[in-house]
Length: 428
Image 1 (spheres, rainbow, N blue to C red):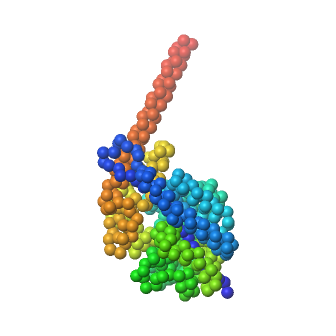
Image 2 (cartoon, rainbow, N blue to C red):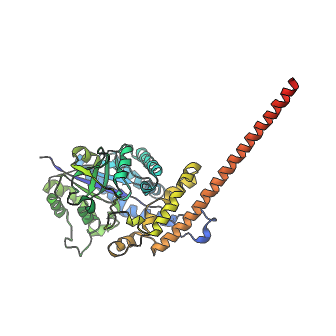
Image 3 (cartoon, rainbow, N blue to C red):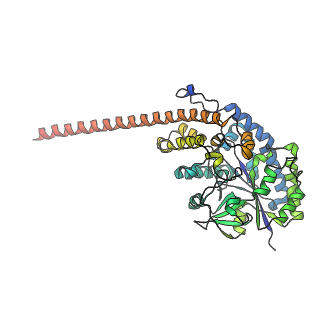
């Protein structure tokens, strides 16, 4: 009998955080970023999570060889900060890449929501991210994971059109209904695109509930989890989570590293699962049905929709104002403006503006550097206002150059015409 598949995927992302940017800075100060916070947080998470977690993954690969597989998607903004503040993190990922047991996934360079607003920017970001992964790790990604697992029929069609045949998304209950996330599905428009769905219950048992002493299943051990895998229906269990789960969201003192270190042994001993990368899983398993997703889903909050980023007027205003500048920024081809446009697109900025309370409020509060969503909105809009001013100034400057060039060309033509006319008269 064929073994079932366990697919382990981690998201690696760090936004480039904005400094406190005041109204009176607009038009005067282009220094948008909190370099101290970015350096401090990148170093802290590198030491707590990325470096020890990568060492652990490398040890597991050395111990189990090709029997242990893991996959990552690393945003371009995270890579930028590793290059500046923690280059040893990139070296440790390169070491993992060299084993052949790790798959690196494609995604948007900026961890952006471009797929919802600007298809040209979405495609361009994916292309840049793919090139970055190829240059760093020597492998061109063949599996796609959108920002925050955001997916719809339309987005899947775009991804398929870019040449990807496998995509990750959320096994959202309101989409699946009675169906199980533990099978492979296809895009309902283009059946060539296979979909791997996150098993949110088992993933969140690790990512969110692992250290919760009030949870009736605490403490979670590797052998207990292997038993839960055995009881799962279907052919494949996809465990998708933030890499920062290891050591940052769940501190080393919770036993999270011990849990993951011992998980493969327990899986091999007491379950009928094998570890595969998303690419391998898509080759092995045949889809059982198309999955119809008319409206975008994500892996965030109870609703598993877009309301974490675009659920209120503040978020929508900021989002729309940002993307209004898109075409102008492309046409200008100004490196500084393109860099800032990248950084301002990170979905985190809109997440900080979320006004949700109740069940998801605590999670939002954990991730935001602001005291209130309104403070996040004001700070972002101040930065965005200055950015738009710079774009408009550059457009005007370019137009003036064009006008001067036209006038010069016209003047040259007029002079030549006059010369020809005079020459013609002399010849007569």
